[in-house]
Image (cartoon, rainbow, N blue to C red; front, side, top):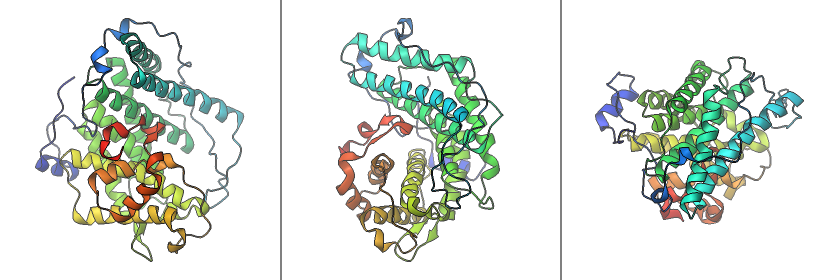
Length: 369
């Protein structure tokens, strides 16, 4: 794998303006480092994995939403069809296996444990890549969402693994091709939505952009970063000023009792994309940081002092702590943000793990251990 390097600022700015430049390596937000485990790596591909992956899922993605679509706020959970549940279980079991694989690698204390964990990750990846899993064009909106969440989880695990193995874990050509095809499918799914004229431009689009963005860092694809930056900038433009010192996302605010929860969920991809931009020489402007910071104000106030957000239409549900993982990269870039610091002071011990981001990301943000 070629050595990664930061993009020059001028080049990155031109890319964000849509001007074509020669290909260059994409700089990762999680730099490679020597670890106890990386020093024990051997020929892991020669090791047999005793855990067979679930059969690659290559069927349709006509999945039902878990939310009642007749509810305008999309906050009422409804039952799933047997077919949707079956497909979701297969895909989720695959994600859990990959997550457990990298967790075993992180916990490994002997060369045998290290190489067995890597062998299983390699075997599971190769199995689904070889069969072209999740690449169907027969999809529903929820099916397209499942595909982008899968890409986000898989590529985040691999970007993390690349860092923790000091870039000694290498994707096979089959695996790289599969990730490229998944990325292209996600871009095909979500490119028509990349406009504020699209009525439902929301957290799904932000997560699709992050899925492509993290794959871009993994595969050294600046065109993927450029595509994702379009969504990021649209999200900043979409934010509306609130009654206090905060901004909100209109479609997330419309989620009734889930409004604060969905703002935290939206902040995860937005903050990680901001970190990606900064790492690749595209510094956010003062106005862009102001908008993102004011969105953070809304999310923090919704947890700390819910009554101070007048736009909320009902009492808010408890926000899952894993959705606050955005605090780590945000505070690494904006360490003096008052409300982010206050929120982190309350929840910091419970923040840092999110399976959809590859598991525990705290090793990459040591100032917040």
